[in-house]
Image (cartoon, rainbow, N blue to C red; front, top):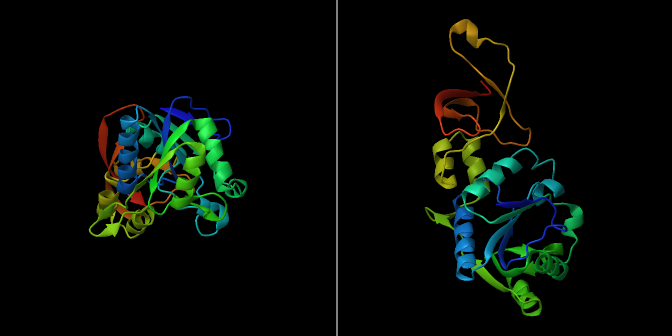
Length: 245
């Protein structure tokens, strides 16, 4: 998978089917959209690409409310996108400057830089300044810039639209099983081991302390049955993880 960190310098020369969003957590709703993206790309003999934002728009406009509740870090997002078979990922920071780009200018940019032949988006998607580029506007711009627009209906579980907000709520309540149901996998965290007080040695149990990025959401305080896996290894080790205990 190709990974770019700057929308203005990213270049894709082959025909591209593109979707755009935050994709925090890459839950089952995201996975459904990505499946549609890949199927559409295959039908057009094109490559699949995603523009994903980190930080997301809410963090920029309301940092006091949305700065430490991310379900995935940028590196975790890259790893998950790779596993889903995406051809190209443009992972860029959202900014106030980016929010001021008009829909026509944004569309012109992605068509010229990324060779977009089709946009695959959710039914309520919008881009550009003041979210002016809704689906109908994007379809109209497609007539001018030479691309098509496919809309994907919301993904429902138990009659509810799956969202990153739902996943966060389940984790904060300690319902990891429900969060896993929404994610389509058990929640995971990539971290580094740091030196602790070494109390585990005195009670006969080896322990490890993990450094967690401040922006990363953790489940409710408690004791969880977990597995630990080293980078580059498929071997999992059963473990018990204390969060805030």
